[in-house]
Length: 68
Image (cartoon, helix red, strand yellow):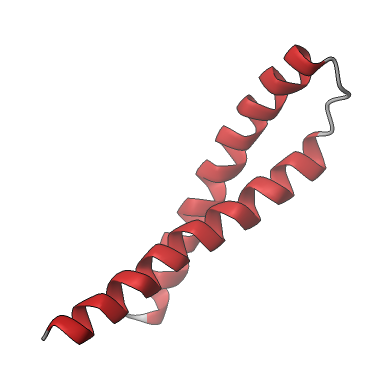
């Protein structure tokens, strides 16, 4: 996979992780009667999304190398 394609994929992951993180954070904050901090929720969601997606890609890449 080229570097530009990887960058584009990671930007899409960041975008959707922030969107879903904000929605889940808003609902969770209302249910738990906590303060809603959009900036910190968005940053944490983006980091978790990147770690999750890139971790899966690394694990599946190493799995395909060992099965060949």
